[in-house]
Length: 374
Length: 200
Ligand SMILES: Nc1ncnc2c1ncn2[C@@H]1O[C@H](COP(=O)(O)OP(=O)(O)O)[C@@H](O)[C@H]1O
Ligand SMILES: [Mg+2]
Ligand SMILES: [Zn+2]
Image 1 (cartoon, protein in one colour):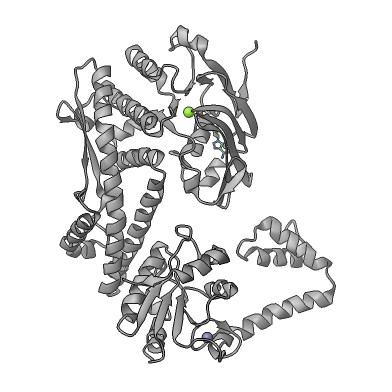
Image 2 (cartoon, chains in turn purple, yellow; image 1 turned 90 degrees about the vertical axis):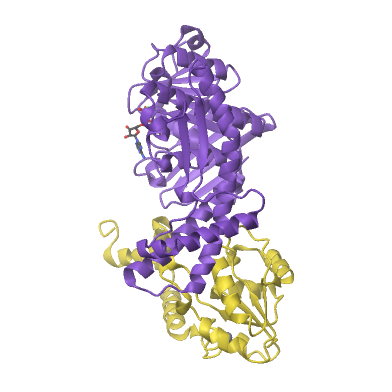
């Protein structure tokens, strides 16, 4: 797919900006705090309806404005789509596809696919399990828009169940066994769906990531991604998986009542990442960790391409200049002309002259795009 | 606000803004509109507000909004006494009545089980429902509660309590996931009523 234009209206530090993209590689160059990442964030929002930088729409709307808007024209193999997201300071959002409002966000997701790669992504290796789950879930939503609903449903049941356990612990409200039982069932039903989807995804993602890592590291390192679910999946039947989940809840019920929170379920999943059998988190050098993230991103890119049948966009926020020339070339080699790529950078010096030549270069200056003089 | 509007106007705008779905701009538009109307009309509006608040309470049988101790639906002699449709809110009664497909009685729970909001079964009108359903003329209870997480828990909870007394069905939702009854169009609701199924 190919983004042919983007308009930002009262979004972050942009007032009113329209831009037509004319090359498969677009470079946004500018000093810090000018709006480069903001533009990529706009594309990310059209893709996932989430931003990895904030969960408050108020932050996304230009200060002192009530409404912000992001719209774009996307060329897909199946035809051209016109996407629009309207953000309001009261948190209400509306989305439209081809100028028609769609009521469910589900119907908006899945139009624009993008893989994004920023310096923050190092946290996938260095951070805790929550960072890894978040990464996996973001890929999941791109591939299976319904997963957004499944994950949200699970989080919601989890919150309710935690509230019930907490009431009991903090206020000594007697636990109504009948009510707890119903929340258990709902947690198990939603939880099993999450576990199954994560398991399926990792099964496909792991070999691709291993392939890319091996290639970039010159076949010196073997990357292994392993799903470590808190409750083991039972792919044979959802019923078996649910009763297994319920049995785990039963086992932990005393501890849960004592702690006043849910101790069983996919909100405690881990995804282990090892390089030559040692955990990448502790043992990997900075360079190895960068290679690993690059391999994950390339795996995402190729998997989405394969599943969706249309190459996703690639958003590279400040990371390209941080990679050494070997890794830069590996990445550019993998992208070729197939994936439209948006690159932000503070300086052009670190890049290969050959492909700079073929790129569309835009300068970003305090919330405005400046085209180079011809 | 006090600096922009002369004081009584500011108070009016502020009050209007507390209404659901009314933002500052709409509140201002409504307030300025009210000031332009003849005084008699504004009197009528004020009186309607006060009277509605003072006179409308809950039906002592079904807990639907009612100015009488027992509501019109509960008193209607031509409605089917043997079926009770259980809903979360009075808004749902109004939505179902608009379909004109249902001729039985209602029971309004007054909310959904939601530990986050401190609402458990004791905060809902569940006990009076059990009493109603235990009467011999009741042959079916229809649970018409939205399929949200809270709705599902409430449906199953109430269903378990009522099943010893009578047949319990739930309406089949072709509704948007997590959707409210209120927003479902009438055709969808009517179809959902027809396609109700036995509660497991
Ligand atoms: N809601 C907002 N309204 C106005 N300006 C904003 C808003 N959010 C962020 N900014 C501004 O955007 C700039 C940061 O933009 P960003 O795209 O992150 O920079 P960079 O070009 O370094 O990637 C900062 O100057 C910040 O003050
Ligand atoms: Mg930036
Ligand atoms: Zn009544």
